[in-house]
Amino acid sequence: MKRVIFLLLLLVFFIGCSTKQVPIAHNSYFDDSTERAYVTYESGVLNYYIAIEKPAPCYKIVKDEKVMESYPVQVVVDIHLEPPEDFCVEIISEETVTGRIVTGHKPGSFKVTFEGGDFYYTNFK
Image (cartoon, rainbow, N blue to C red; front, side, top):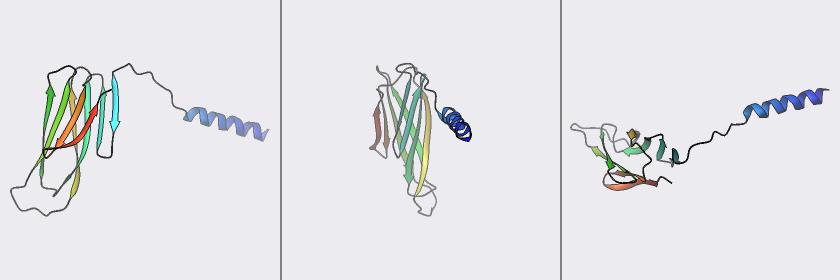
């Protein structure tokens, strides 16, 4: 009897821990991540989180988001650092750059440049 109760409790536990698969409409969802970037797209909205290193905490991050008028849409985020006007202690720090871009429909590609060089790129397939 104890064994039956134990097996039933174990069965209830595993059923409770299982995840339900939710069907996602084709071309409505995209998720990509690396050590330094996380990009999602869902229902016309592109969200991104980019981890960059600054040479000092007082450097200002400037980003320029561009949505190219093509089909499929191409999205480019240019990131660069503006040095401080005053003296600043040089301590390398990591900061996350985030953004939300309404594209209307799924982009063909997403690219991030940092200080003029390619930093991250993905195709939305």
